[in-house]
Image 1 (cartoon, helix red, strand yellow):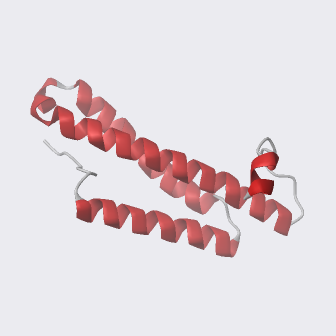
Image 2 (cartoon, rainbow, N blue to C red):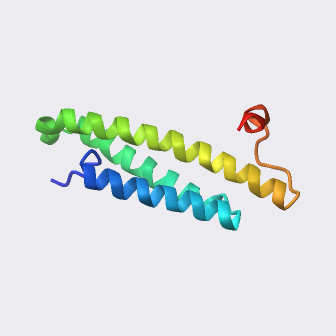
Length: 110
């Protein structure tokens, strides 16, 4: 069976590098869908690990899968807020209405 172990140091480094580069690219070209790609990937990996957690063939990997899920939840949180941040940057640059302005108080503090 296949287990994508996102807790190995090299995998963490590669995922963090790719995520930071996607966030930076989205900020530079002011397109919020680019960090949404990273968000979608982390949600799919999270879904895969959640299904594997329920399968009896992965019982010996139970602890590893739990750590993977915790890491992916943190990355979903980071990429979701980066998506909202870049959406706010793009809406100010193009003078458009943002998708959601409920975090205006937060962006003023940043």
